[in-house]
Length: 287
Ligand code: AMP
Image 1 (spheres, rainbow, N blue to C red):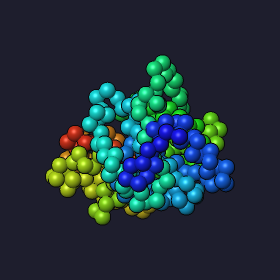
Image 2: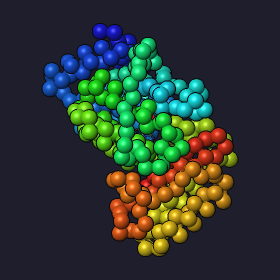
Image 3: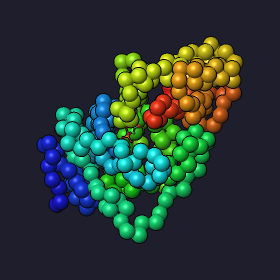
């Protein structure tokens, strides 16, 4: 089997090596959870590993900065890559293996397929600002699910629309994997942990917790039955006044992601994307 060991954890660089190991685990009656990531791991990712261990005996973490989910002007080239540190964190977290394929293993010459998405992928949130993003996410997740033959895939609510898109796809395409959600892990000041937080200057890092604070205030107003349209408009203004460029802050149905106009349309989820400097941050909370 083509595997290597880095920082005390097994690395699969090929689909064949991963499948052989999973086949062995399954033959021994052990279930497998997959945690798909792009690396630059933080406590949010580690919490996904911990959640995976609640469901399955074996955990594979994939680390792959997926080119097809980045638009040409986005940060694919400069996306943080910290592989050795990531492996050390994963050993400590109790993961069994890392799937770390080269780009050619995932997209060999001639690769010409994409997953076409409807429903939660086309509701005018992330898809409005990153029109090809979910197509890339779904394509790579579909490949990871079928490559690994894992029983569970653990995803963070941090990327809420992504979670809905991937959950829908796994069900619609009968991929034989259960998508398990995990609540967002935050810094002490409320900022959602993200690999992209390391791009923030000290000044912008100090402003960033405003996003979560404004959403919490907005959620409280909505629960108090303040008129929803006005409450959302006020919160949008607050974020812009704080110095962000706002892509969106919207109240949506928590399951379908369809627009809502009142508390009674709920359950409601607030979803936000905002830019500060050259960093784009996303977050969401339940009302
Ligand atoms: P990424 O490496 O950013 O593509 O994220 C990989 C997985 O980690 C996705 O399922 C994310 O939703 C999840 N994730 C990222 N940040 C957090 C966080 N702060 N809390 C929980 N899950 C997270």
